[in-house]
Amino acid sequence: MLTRLAPTPSGLLHMGNACNFLVTWAYSRARGGQVLLRIDDADPNMVHPEGIADIHDTLSWLMIDIDGQLPSQQSRYGRYWSAIEELTAEAHIYACDCTRSQIRAASPGGHYPGTCRDRGLAVEAPEVSLRCRVDDGFGDPVVWGKNRVPAYHVASLCDDVDAGVTHVIRGDDLTAASAVQLQIARRAPSLASFCPMSIIHHPLLLGQNGQKLSKSVHSTTLRSLRAAGLSRSAVVEAAMALADPQTGQYLAERISTRT
Ligand SMILES: [Zn+2]
Image (cartoon, rainbow, N blue to C red):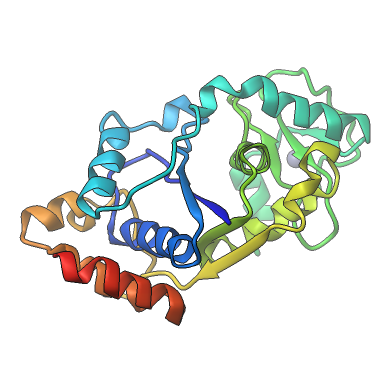
């Protein structure tokens, strides 16, 4: 079993990120598996100046040991583009120049309504994103952004496949993303091994208002909570509430006794 932690360094981590680290790590360790770290830095414009240091500091504070770290996604654009070329060869890729507000207006539910599917826009044109044609009901995802950087779905898929990840463990806010990734993977031969992968979604830790936590709210960063006295065991207890029994048991034995 091989899984990975895949934080985005777009801001300082919050309690929910820490819980995901603990659940993912303990899920694999409890079953004799390995854990890699991958920092999702594909878009250099989204890298917070302190984001990467904050990830390493948090892992060390949580006493999470890893078996290796994958290379920066910024060194892998060639690989991601080769996946786009595979999809293009089978006519799954098209260019889209819709703005977010146009998409919202056309599809209040949020799914991309396929506006540009048959417009034949040039994929080399400036200010277009590339979308992958998938089954109806998923909303054709962006696979290459207007800012000319690979989209999350493609970078994450290529990295998981190439690293030989067997188990993806993520919050249930990514359930729809997992379904979209399976759609893309089915269409690119080099990504096909993603399809039999085990994808496990755990419940999210919610804020006091019942909302998903956000990296953009300073008061909820792990760094500020730690400065205010948050203990490691309190984070572990929060993570245990989101874990299956075997994973929770491992967390209880491995960490709580050491804090
Ligand atoms: Zn469009």
